[in-house]
Amino acid sequence: MEKRLGIYIHVPFCIRKCAYCDFYSITDFSILTAYTDALIAQIRAFRPLARGYLVDSIFIGGGTPSVLPARQIGRILSALRATFRVSPSVEITMEANPGTLDAENLAGYREAGVNRLSLGLQSADDGELARLSRIHTRRTFEESFLLARLEGFRNINIDLMYALPGQTEQRLADTLSYAVALGPEHISFYGLKLEPETPFGKDPTIASQIPDEDEQYVMYLSSVHTMESAGYTQYEISNFAKDGMECRHNLKYWHLDEYLGFGPAAYSFFDGKMFSYARDVERFIMNATDLRLLFDEYTVPSEKELAAEYVMVGFRLRRGIDVADYAARFGDDFDARYAKKMKPFIDRRYIVKTPEGYRLSLQGMLVSNYILSEILEF
Ligand code: SF4
Image (cartoon, rainbow, N blue to C red; front, side, top):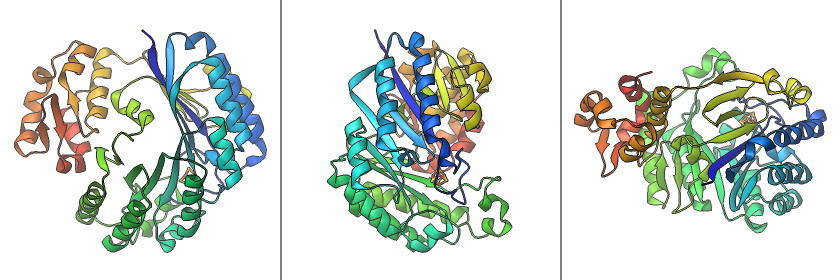
């Protein structure tokens, strides 16, 4: 039987760097075409390994993929179709930033095959957006969203953030109401993390302006409530979707299914190996088809490590761990291995028993890192 595969394409270019972001991206656009050529060469080099796989999700992320003209996105997708067997019902997501979209490129992306857009709003408050150094305002976002609808996109995600410096519960509630009123099919909702190598991380005044843990707790719970009341089911700690509109690609990460990443900083889990490429565009362009010169990390995890990884990512999902699936994949008894360690969390209702296995409660999701560090064996 054909195995399913997800493909991730990294587009490491941004118009300017946002103050909080440590994703790998650069602001020099003079090498966009050379970069696309290198991506295509790398994709083609995977032809001998593509046999036996059916690609059912493609995610073009960044960076800001919408800085690439539709023609280049079309070339990348054509190379993928020429190399891999791609499902006729493939989900093809492209991340895009408001301020980089117009009717022409949106129509071109659709024509190239993109059928899901992920738009970064982050906040609907112009003051917060300026603080984050986003390139757009609430109005620019709204124009992009409506234009995408007009151009026929029926599957749109909006990215939101909370726990921003100086953010009040009311301002976050306004952002949530604004986002759900637009009626996207999917909402991603992440708390800001201070990354040490970013302008926010280096500014000692920022940390003191971030809402404290208790405030974040209230913000998270009330936002989950707003989204659930508006018809968005929380299917993962930070992700919410209308019925049937979960992100197929991201589910692969949480199910520990196979995916192949292309581009600097991209991660892969493929054929039992986990690997990533160095964060260096120029090195990537020069050595796109010689993977040995690109690897940043390369590991062949043991069965035991994979089983622990499966538990770690599986607990992120609302449906949690399916013990029968765990046993089928790893030949291991989940209850025998974890019941004792889970007991204190079950007693406090951080972990809940389900017909299939176990999941985190909403309260458990808020402290998921702590729970996992207590029960997992690495
Ligand atoms: S646009 Fe996205 S990837 Fe680029 S710097 Fe901002 S947050 Fe990071």
